[in-house]
Length: 249
Image (cartoon, rainbow, N blue to C red):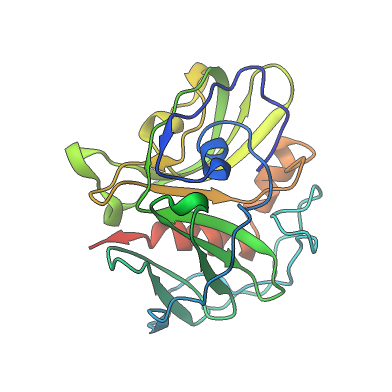
């Protein structure tokens, strides 16, 4: 996820996660996941019941990965409920449901740092979403103007100290263009208006923390109207359903 907002983004305070996730935790970020040796897909992925979410439409992301393309895809006219699988991180705590046509691969952070990254790709192999479990992180950021397009509670991820992270899809600006963010976020990142603290998608959990980042191209959208149009697509519905399905056990 990327836009040129470095002027107002401060560094993410990070202990126990790779440099790529440090950058991705707060504000403008690169559009590709961390580079690390691939491990086998977790053997905890299994077939589960079907959720009532739209079926996947033809992928619109380019082969370099990331969603969506700078021109938002047209809404799908045909909807169905896809079969799902469940992925559980190796420590057994955090899980999520995803369309069975998609894939999940896991990698370890660089330099032996703690945590495991799970990268979700669509049926064409385009990376759509990165999640990192068991990390220790925090966010700091400068003031931005934020418009919240969509938000929802994620009851399965209620954290320590009564924190309640939620799903969000937002646009932020610091006067040099809009940046788009989507994922599980700190509640402060879902406040709309001027002078709010910039996006933070690193949330505390009982086993250290969880990071989520939907991969957007640069630019993510030509304008906010295109971003809103993308919300009517199957791709958006399935990514949102995946994030809403997150659960800590």
